[in-house]
Length: 395
Image (cartoon, rainbow, N blue to C red; front, side, top):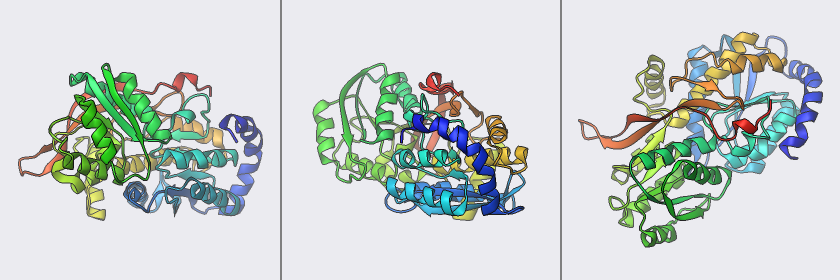
């Protein structure tokens, strides 16, 4: 079913049916249950683990509550399989009466899962995936994105590459929705020429052919979007191919996070990154979060963790204002759109399509005074930046 097909159906049916089913399943006074479907296994499993752990950290910091309302995250692994995510959502809706969802990492899983959630009278709040098709004409009043719209983060990389003076880029990404959005976003703001463009596979581990193509094209910069384990493999092979230090690289946040940095070490030195968040942001709420995450999980949080935490805060702000009543979805929406929480990234507000308007920064991998590699935040590259699809969203 296309998203457009269920807009009228969900508006007519969900409002009358959601409240009784929620009350029957959860019981008066029971915690608000949040269906948390995410990727926890495979090479990309750490992405979902960071989102889940930060989300739970926010709950734990309030003694099992968000916004003063008792909540319970019901976590399941989609295995990066769209069909599995869809089945989990259908079961949670049908058997468990859950109507508030979050957690999905990958856009292909979200594309298979979110329509069923929304068509079933549910609410979805995304901590990561923000595909273009849900940001424009197929937007929905019960669909919110806390992280980014897919194109927008790669637009920041395109702007950064131009500001760094690069004129000739070779660009690569996996051939799925987020990968297509990535290349579209980069090209939208890159002022130079595209020397070559290739799609890879989402399960690819050998990039020898791509390294040969880059070498043959001889660009002055490479942009690549390969999240999680894909990014680790790509960077290692880029170094092994002798391209590191010869052809610079500009990427957006998913292609080089703190876990990637720890895994690849020197292969990341000098890589330029753009992000809406970093561990060195000096606002009080971010410094407290980074310290608490490290203390609880004994690792440095990634961008994904920051988004998981912000998602919990956003949900908590809405629950506080509605006294935990998610059956009245219009009231919940009014509360959500106020974005009445202190984001770890600093300024945050929703655009007209319920996706973020936020700032983007240039980061670079450098060695600190102790000789350790770190991602260091530099200048702002985009300010109060939304996305290219908002004008097509009619809510």
